[in-house]
Length: 160
Length: 160
DNA sequence: TATTGTTATACTCTATAACTATA
DNA sequence: TATAGTTATAGAGTATAACAATA
Image 1 (cartoon, rainbow over the protein chains, first blue to last red):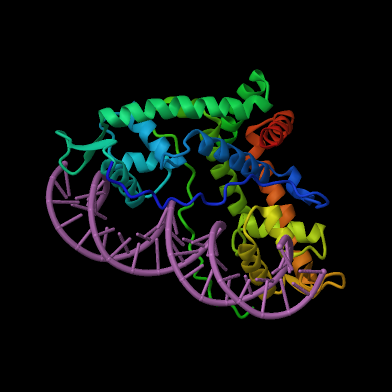
Image 2 (cartoon, rainbow over the protein chains, first blue to last red):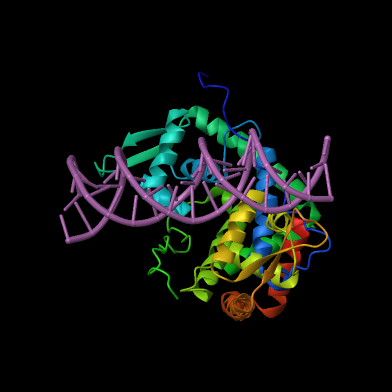
C-alpha cells in the first residue's frame, strides 16, 4: 500500500466520565443526553474494533450497505446514511481510492453510478463486521442478552 | 435584542428515513447504528423544542450543569461535557456574551473562574427545561411510560 | 511541576449552491 | 423540469499545542 504512515490523529478517545460531585440536574432524566453518552461509549467500542484501519462509523455503514445492495447509487447511499449527495460522493471517492469499491455505469440510467464492493472491499467488510459485532458484544456485556434485545427494540421504536 | 437576524442556518433537519427496498444488512443488529438513528430523532425533537433560540444540545447541557452547580470552573464544565478546555471556554464565552452566564473570580483559586447563571440565564434554562422535557415526552410517546423508563435505565447501564 | 484559562491553528464533517449531463 | 453526479465554498465543532499566571 502506497499510503503515507497515516497522519490519522487519535482524536481524543475517552468516554464521557461522570464527574464526581457534579449535579447533572435534569440531564439524567432526558433521553437525549443518555443517548449521547451511550453513543460515545459505543463509538469507543467501534474504535477498538477497527483500530489501525482508517474506518469511521459512516464509512463502515456505507461499506455494509453497498455490500448488501450491489449497484446502489450514490444518492441512495446518501439518503440511507442521512447525508447530502455531495457528502456521499466524497465517501464514495474515499472508498474507490482505497480500492474497496468500484463505480460501474448502470445500463438503466446513464446519470447514475452503481457502487459495488471489490474483492478487497468484501473481505474487509467481512473482517470488520466480525470485529465490530464482537467488540459490541463485549461492551454490551454490561447488559444481559434479553436486555440488549430490548434496548435494540426500544431504540428502533423511538427512532420510528 | 440587538442581534442581527440570525444567519443561523437550519442545517438539514430531517430524520434518517428508512429507505424502501434497501437491505440494511448487519446494521439492523448493531447497537451503534440504532443509537445513532435514535439520537438523530431526539435531536430533531430537541430542535423543535428550542426553535428560534440559538441553542444546541451542548449549550443546553452547559446551562443546566451551571445552574445545578453554581461556581463551576470552565475545566470542570469541559470534563462534564466531554470536550477540551479550549472548547469549554468558547462555550462559556458564548453564554457570557448573551448575558446568560457570569464569570466570577473564585476566592479559593485565583486561576479559575466560577461560572454562574445570571437572572436571565436562569429564566431561559427554566423555560428550555420545560420545553425540552415536554417535546421529549411527545417523541417518547412512541414508547409506553415503563418502556421509556427501561430505555433510560439500559442506556445508563450500557454507557457505564 | 501541575493546573486554569487563554490563544492560535488545523482538521473533519457536512451543508448549500451552482453547474453538467441525462431523464 | 427533475434528478445524479460533481465541484467549490463555507461553517460548526472540537482537537492540539504553546504560553502566562497561579497552585
